[in-house]
Length: 157
Length: 457
Image (cartoon, rainbow over the protein chains, first blue to last red):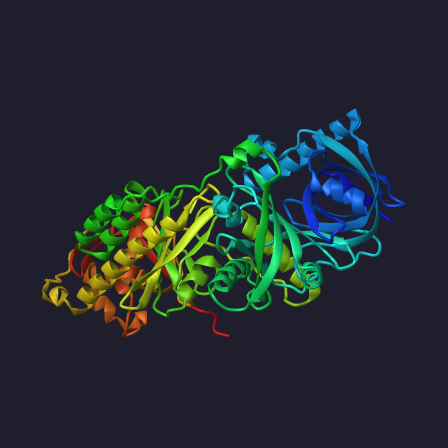
């Protein structure tokens, strides 16, 4: 399901944006703060979210459907994963360490790419996180251009 | 809706930080992606650019609700906007603004034929919600206009009106932009004789003056602004270039366009903000005024308005000077007795001239090409044969080897360009303006002139 190259990309600190949808069909966008592939074969991942995000979390509990787009900051190379929530869990110490590492990698790319200020970027960071266990079933090329939205059957980047 | 208004968030819509949009299909499957551009329409509405038949567009056709994340690029406060689709526009002010944004990306990436705005989708914003740092978010206020006083521009106008020739007009303009108006990095480009290119005649705030660099009208955002004869303001140049390169690669992979070259743009290597404003006189495009900054979203609408006034002043001053130059008989009255100014023989300069395009090299270094190169070659020929140093614009204008057009020959601009290039390089050859329509060639040491003919095949 998730090739080694794609797994490395997903875990390497790309920008993570998340789409959820409520029971009434209203979509809500939020950000992810780290992703770990639990099983490349089944597409199961541990996605870290802002535990104070509010509506996105309510949506996940209501409909369980989720989309996550992972974008390489310097090149905009992007893939979108779609699937379902398995469960929400409280964050562990390992999750918090993982999120710290993710933030270092992601913000580092942003700073190198567009010269943003680290202290300002940290304002975007959530105070608390939780873990969403998600099983992804579909993968799409999301790189800007005419090919955006095309299914990637093998999951290869 | 919270007390926040879209106007409070106006910097979020300058494109400095990519926005995010989430939509959902009728079946309830979400989709999330980055947006190339969001524009503020009015107090209740925003517009999103639509370039492709994307999943986002298909979802919105089924379920007209969306959620957008935008970030204030100075405070890094993020807002979640809840939207309801209202309508699609294919003409009008909003469409044109988004079209300018898309065309600017297309122009810097050389993909104008394939990357086009299809439509501007207009959404009503039904909720604005800060997602981080709520106290700071609610304290957010619209930024004050950067330009608040007419006094500096009045002083610049006064200085320009005292200029007696083109060299002092362009020099006073770029110096005044920095000293009086705070624009530390500026370029002045003039339309060339063919009307298809712009060449830099003066600049301020760059490591090398860079005069002589060229832009094709219709290419990159300076060329686009010139072609459309309207101002273009970008607050996220580097991101725009990266985005454009990615989209171009995607088009190349799809076979829609062939691999192409990147277009070099004169200016700051890592500029983040740029404003390009056309200089007009008597309804004609004279050139472009460009200011740049290393900071994101460094300029606002007040800068655009102020630079529009400055560009108009410069354009009209240049046009007035050209009209005077064309009609003034002063240069015909002057004595043109050859003046020999032998320089110290210790310095020798090897000049190579390529007839194919007028490219001229001093020693091994490229100096200039085109009309300015041919002018220099002609002057150096006179100097070598007759030891002449004093010339008039009139006689240069009549030199058939230069092939100048009869109308708008740009001779004075080319002479200024040549003078500035020689000064910039501290060359052994210099040009000094000696009066209205006259100038003197200074040569230090001896010259070795080599003309390289075009291949005969």
